[in-house]
Image (tube, rainbow, N blue to C red; front, side, top):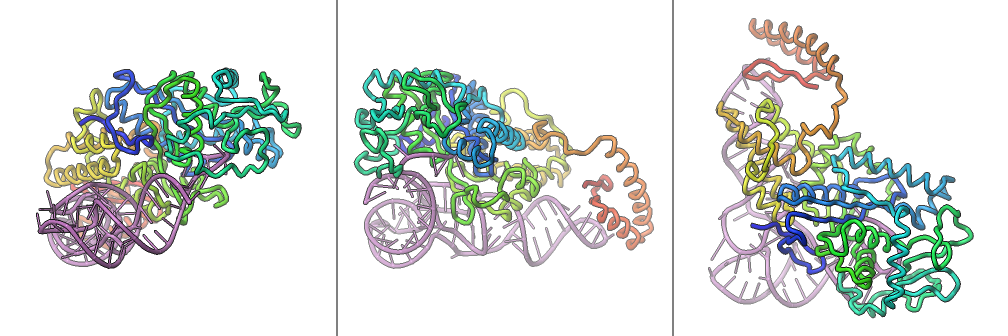
Length: 467
RNA sequence: GGUGGGUUGGCCGAGAGGCGAGGCAACGGACUGCAAAUCCGUGUACACGGGUUCAAAUCCCGUACCCACCUCCA
């Protein structure tokens, strides 16, 4: 079965056929670095990280471009609010975002272009659009340049909307637009804005409109035509619609497939900063580990809305620990799979992933394999095959507990040795008590260790401890 | 007004005409000195009303409620 992906443009799941066999070019709309990332923000990073990993398993060399929007109205407004230079604000938030991605084992993109670094490319594209009659400088002296929606008959095709049905922008001030639906390619600088937030252009100093950066950067790094363009559902319109219109009006084929991840909501509503800080990534990670949060995100389908709750998150963490427990029981026998993963991944897992990244079904296969492995352990059979399969599946989903990306657990090897020696002494004492059938004494030792945060588990091979 | 999506058991969350995905919780059993972990077993869920069909959570018609987007948004 070939890999099939859901394409927003055609609204169907269809075979993935790359433009260049063996290669896949992906452009993902990253974040506007105007505030610290919450779990909703990182969902797209995780979803498309899974896509990227799976394309790799499927034998494609992936070029993954994820941009950073580091100049826009909100950034300027927040900078002013916080009495910070806008570029200092974006730098802080960019670092927080990098940390959040790292904590969730989201692989760094092949390249991460920033809008402010691509003004010349944008100006070139805007110039071309004007030349082709699809854009015009405002006649009101504002220095704005707009895309002429009426000049592009297929405008609205991505989201299947008719221009006549669209509500006009509420922006009130029609500025120099010919039509209220025209959107800004370039925004003339205003006296109130810092000079650092404007660049010279043929229409005077100004800064880029939001959409043009993605057209310019996708074109630069992936070419006039590329395979997959991704982002959150809210970006379909206007952002992606506008990107496609611009790029195609400029003579580029642009994306072959459009993929959009659904929202994480809280209390039935879109997650927004007004809900406070509890859902910022570092705060959520006080409750569960990064790998557990990622498991939670990956266990639901990328196109399904997820109603975030700490209860569900804890459940996911419990489910994940079950998988981890199997690997621990099996003593990590069997190395991480190398070479062709397709040879060790269960067929049902591959089928699930091929079906538009069916991670929920894939996770079910993972649990089935864990159960089988546990059953075999109970029976004293060899589990190397199950361990290899489980680790391969975890790797594809980016949640292998042994992945160095999770970093050290914060435990110092030396201290572990010290604690082990101390605990061993108590365990020997407990073993003696058990041999004497002095259950009260044996349980007292276990309880004291538990109070100190050390959990004792009796196994056929003797007791083990963990914290 | 336009466009798109949703409503599944105690909870989370898949599926898309016939065989109960999976996880969490619960209950019973095995194992254990007792636990923990693990294994085995236990459920007649698909918003509502009609219809099509031998068979509907799944298809069709209608209704209700919820959410997102319509030029700031992951």
